[in-house]
Image (cartoon, rainbow, N blue to C red; front, top):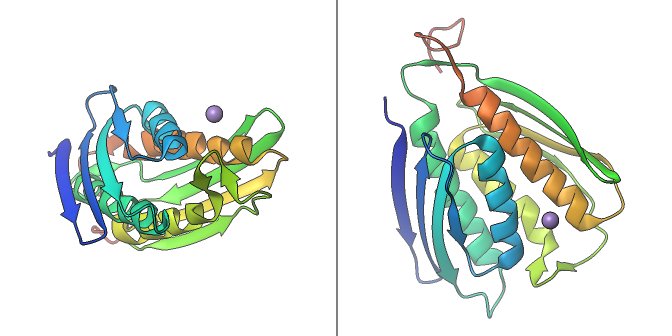
Length: 192
Ligand SMILES: [Mn+2]
């Protein structure tokens, strides 16, 4: 079974290189957007895997291209590792707080992409990070990883806390859903 992969995606707008190693937990993430580095580091830590990301792009225009392209590349890399001929736990639902914020992430490694995303940020920026690109990131990520992904902020006041709570919940959900429970693919249809 394949436990690591490296993908590089270069366009006229961005250059993104991502390595995932399911058997390590020593991430190194440099996207040029510090808040996104902070979120992806938290995700990888709680997923108990290693993410190495080097990404740059035309953020002087807008962060949208780079954030979306990181979502695309990360999703494609995970898609390679998730859907192999092995029985993963597949489903997970995690609800965790961060101070006053509470978020729930529920997912299914279904091989059918879908995104439900309920977060209404109060501010346009966290540091230099443009907050409204978070949905763009998860849309690209869910499509390319072919995961059914539901992200719901249940309540909260502080945008940093709300976003961090669902990146952590996503990590914990990945850790659980990636767990191998049987030799055969987890589906009554015999295939995903
Ligand atoms: Mn933080």
